[in-house]
Image (tube, rainbow, N blue to C red):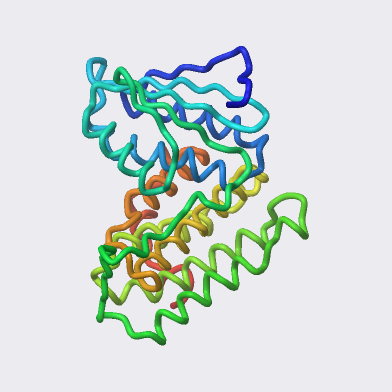
Length: 280
């Protein structure tokens, strides 16, 4: 194992407020990494904590210790919320992470550089395949094309920081993508998330620009997660329809926290139709 630095940062998560403090620290640290891979690994932890936030109290808490070297982050997690620990171990195993769980403490590491074998598809005869007939192949191909075209633009290789053009392209991409989802009640959760993000990018473009590359990282991660959701359901056919609902929602919540929208993002704005804003 790599030699760790002498300092250790410890968090005690007992409420939504302390969870938000943890995520704010993570965003601050990761702005030095410029790595969507590292962001995604920490986002998975945040997403799982968000799912069990109603169980968090001063008695039912999650303790997180974070150390790092030049190559890795080393995590130690203990909690008396059994469902949280059991679910987290299950997800680590699914992602092929190496971990240790001894004396009630879960330990694992996050490599700062992406490893080629992080995700391994289960091709065994026991792997379950999900087939959905409510969407035709032509529609799926169009949806794939929408996200791939946005990825291909690769703005960070052209501009040193996020631009209004880039934000508008994300807004157009998500609003157009949402126009496909809205016709299917089975996909309403993802449709609502993508729709709300589109509205935010339209109404708060100046605030988004002020965040610079931090906001570029958030948008890039959301796009990657949306692609992962799409591929896992319609291409690999290995997940149920609610796969990543909580993860995508947590991504949206992170963006709203960063932009300080909870005080001024009204219910009216939240319910604004794409038909009204983008003319679809």
